[in-house]
Every structure is written in C-alpha cells, then in structure tokens.
Figure (cartoon, rainbow, N blue to C red):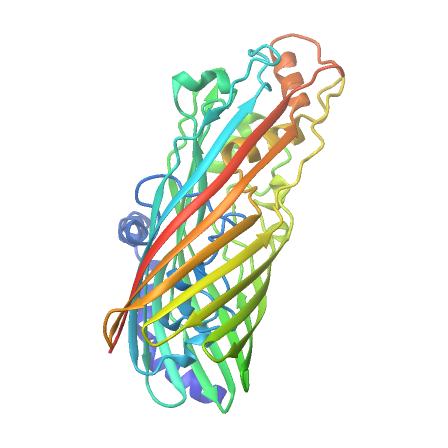
Length: 453
C-alpha cells in the first residue's frame, strides 16, 4: 500500500515539487515577488489578522467554521484539505470549493506602564486592525476507488494590532503596530483500503511579519519581512459502521523574519529573547470522532498545539494549548444546518513583572506588555452556527457565523515602568505599580461555495 501511495505521490504531485524547487532556487527578491502574489490571494487583504486558537484560525473553510471547527473525523468534502486530508476519501468525483471570511476582532488596550503617563491616566483605545478578509480555495479529484488527491491554498494564521495614531497616545500603547500573516499551499494524497484511509501532504508556507512602535528616539522603522518554509501534514481515518475515527498531524514549520523581531526586542530592551528572528509555526496533533444517526452527525475534535516548544513563541512565554471542539450537523439532500462550540485556553501566560529595586523583572514586564499590546491571542470560547443550501445537483452555497465573547486580561508591567524611570536617571522602587489591560472579542462571517463535477 505504501508503494502505491509513493507511486501516485510522484505522478500526481510532481507539479508542487517542481514549484518548491523553483522557488527554493530562485533569487530571494524574486521569491518574494512570486510568493507575495499567493499571500495576497490567500491571507489578509484589508487589515491585520487576529486569529482564534492562539494565532491559528478556528478552522479554515465554511463548513467547519459553522461546526465549531471540527474536521478530523467528519468529511467537509474538498474543504477537508484544511483539516484532516484523509477525510477527502468521501469525495466521489471532482470537487472545487472556495470561501471568503470577513473577520472582525474588537481589541481595546490600556496601560499606565509608561513613566511619562501619570498613574491612572491611561485611557482605553481601540485597535484600528478591526477587519480582515480571508479567502481559501480547494480542489479534490478522485482517481479511482482507492486514491483521491487535491490541492488547497488558504490564509491559515496571523495576528496583529494597530495603535499607530497620535490621538491614541493616552492609551500607553507606544503606538504599537504589528502584523503577522500566514498562508499555506498543501497538496495531499489519500489512499483507502477497506475502511482505513491514510493521507500525506507536503506543505509550502509563506508568511510576513512587521513590528513597529514609538521609542524615546522616534518611531522604529522595521520593514515587513517574509519567510518561506516547508512542512508535512498527515491524516488517518477509520470507519466502523456509523462511527468514524480520525487523527491529524501537522509538522513544525521554521520561519525567520530578518532583523524584525531582534530589532523590536532590542529597542525595547528585552535581552531574554534568544531566538533571534525566528517565530516558528508549531506542530499540531489531533484526534476526532464522528457518529452518524440518519441525517444527523455529532463530531468532536481534540487538538494540541505546541506553542511552548518552538522558537519565538516560547521566548515570549507561550505555553502548549489544548483545544476541544464539538459540532452538530443535520443534512438533507437540499439543505443542512450546523452548530458548534470551540474552547482553547489562551497559550499566553503572565510573566513576573512585579517591581524590584533594580528593575530585575524588566524583561518579564516588557513581554507582558508586548503580548497584550501587540499579540493579544487571549480569547478562549467560540460559538458557531452555519448551513448549506443546494442550488443544483452541482452547486451548493454555505454560510457560517462565529461569535467569540469578550475576554479581559491584565498583566503586571511594574518593572517596565521602573526600567523607564532608571533610563531617565531616576531610582527604581518596589512601590512602583503599573498594568497593561486588553479587552478582546471577535466575530466572523464566512460565505462559501462548492461545485461538484
């Protein structure tokens, strides 16, 4: 069976391998021009993106979005390429799907960490990065009774805020402006024998990062930098009557944003970040189950995202994250309705930023500030609804809505203030007190279409 998988992988995926070879052997400036065309189609198009489980989208695709993000053991047709590629086993012929998500984060930040702002004077300000449009496309083709393959392009992760507004100086956000956008191309092949399906997929990732803020010497001038990385995805599915069990794996993908992170943390005086300009996307593992009862399906996914084990995120105090998603679908030949719930505890943990006589906790306090002002991936609960309408034998339309209630987090930044006092010639004090606070909620509407032929 594995020899057959390799055979089809070579014959059907040679185009992607050639693409990777060409990109890897192309001068860097041409790489960026070529790949930027891809990310313009598959990542954010109007504003910075803020994601849901850490910096990862709840789940790509319109159908999974309406079911709480489940997709490990339930087939969403060609959209299964975004989750467990083994689930494309249920595609009967050829299928193309596309979706567009309007993502609307509402992030408000306040801090009295700056020594230039009197205690209690900080006002709450809303980030201007409050809307993004995120598209995705997937195509799947069945070769025979055993082999199905496909290709997908989608914006999969990202985050950012924008307080670069003179009128918001009172928020104490230092004019923070951050933008991380990540897109992936995946080309899976799935092989089924009896009730078992195995799938593998090479993954090409393109991402960009930019971080800037106001300093005592003027605004930082870090330019947007891009990174190309390669990874692997794999999936399993096993049918036992009305029950389907599934598993997925996505490898870590290394990234490097030249001078962006190192320059930002150096100017902020954070010496404890030793990963340089790396901000690797973490490995993900997941298992799932789905049970069908007539027209109804109930599904559950359990996923683990290893933020605490990759360069960049672990340096800023991110920890591994467990995510649980449950979803329900009732489907007829002409329409379907879906609902779901998703919970993932925030991977960002508060560091000890309490005041010391020598500003010894300065780095921790600065990380607390950076996480809340620049990368507030703090939301945990998500409620979803969705549905399909079959227009014809070939065409179906999908709609999904995700609501994420507000989370409020306050971190201690007292020694960040002490550090600024010392920089200005003053004497740090254990009595110094300051905090950074973020309020973060989200909503998203996804419209999708599927065409079978």
